[in-house]
Length: 126
View: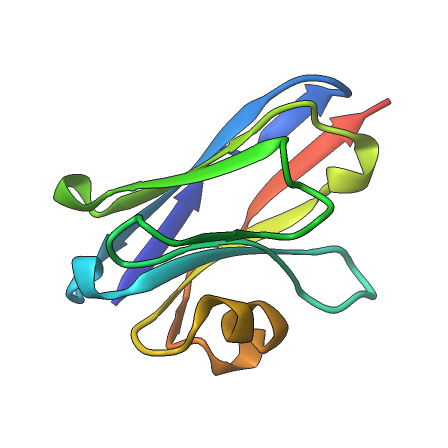
């Protein structure tokens, strides 16, 4: 099982980035995929999740209206389009996959997800 996050980088405030999470080694289209972020010294924070059929999405209040999650099951990939980035969005972003848990539960219980990817660092300068 592998979840490969990419697309992070350095961007100025107000800018945009698109993160990708490429999956392999499991039945991708049967899993919900979530993005979390973490800064040193703080707990991992749920950002956005998307259900297996793309019909169900979930966002943290802090990113609603700025971030959009989508998935391309044919490509085994989930995307996170991040617009209007702010310095407080600076963090390492992780993608995770889970087969059964409801999206709100995953948001609050990152330790319960089935699979984690490595993170990609997003730095937003002021």
